[in-house]
Amino acid sequence: MDICQSLVDLIKAELDPKEFSTGSRGFYVSGKITVDGVRYQGSSNLNGV
Image 1: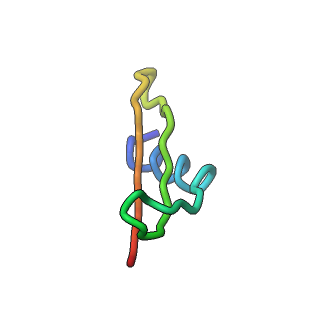
Image 2 (image 1 turned 60 degrees about the vertical axis):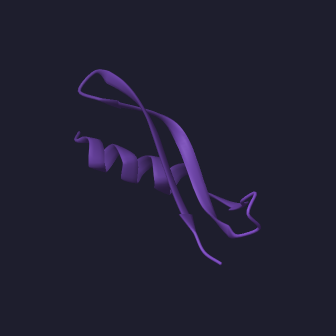
Image 3 (image 1 turned 30 degrees about the horizontal axis):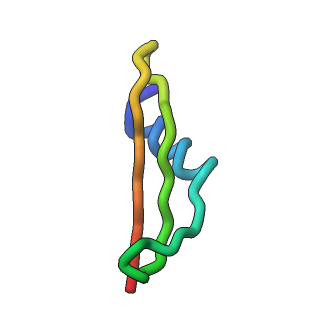
């Protein structure tokens, strides 16, 4: 599995709504993924006004 697909799977499984410290709202996910036997820390966020 490639790293992009692993990040997509993480986002689909664990994406949660969040209110950021700036007051904006969006989505945030963070977690560990394994690609070809190597562990990585992955994170993604999407925020709006």
